[in-house]
Image (cartoon, rainbow over all chains, first blue to last red; front, side, top):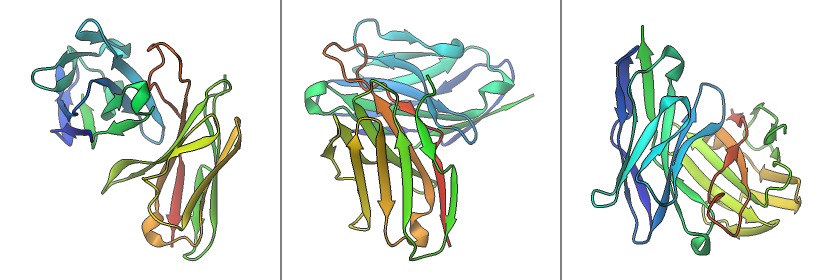
Amino acid sequence: AQSVTQLDSQVPVFEEAPVELRCNYSSSVSVYLFWYVQYPNQGLQLLLKYLSGSTLVKGINGFEAEFNKSQTSFHLRKPSVHISDTAEYFCAVGRDKAAGNKLTFGGGTRVLVKP
Amino acid sequence: DAGVIQSPRHEVTEMGQEVTLRCKPISGHNSLFWYRQTMMRGLELLIYFNNNVPIDDSGMPEDRFSAKMPNASFSTLKIQPSEPRDSAVYFCASSRERADLSGANVLTFGAGSRLTVL
């Protein structure tokens, strides 16, 4: 079985400050890792994904995440946030094709960007 | 591309009534997922289909819930009878499963159907 833990349920941050959202996963097999963002009253949108290769992954809107296999982490960062980054962010883990094409999501981290 | 289309966007119903949620996946996508989102439990996978066939329905809460995918462009999630604890936002998502890794697990979500059972 696999699971995802997002350590912070809420993260308040001032505009133009950096932000880091923490994500840890557990799985007995190799996984794929994702970050999705959910703006108010909308569905989830893909921010970035790690499938293989370089452990530093760049996504949309200036976000990036680093896969750390030894720490089983996939933390999300942005060096300078905007008001428009206010949203809920979900870390997710997927398994390889043979194991089924589905994702397990973390509990989400709500980011509130203050002016 | 219109994306994943869900209807209705909002539904308010009374306990005991039947509820049917609908989803049209992105054309060409061969996997479809139903998720439920609540404050208490977060995002839960209810069921997913691949090539219109249910692959894993282990997340379906109980027999009151059923899902169908009669063709590649349409799926329904039905709750009968509905209960107040079913109140949640139900998301449909689709993806294209490819032989290589480039599309692995990349889901496109619909805007969701917010269900309130009184």
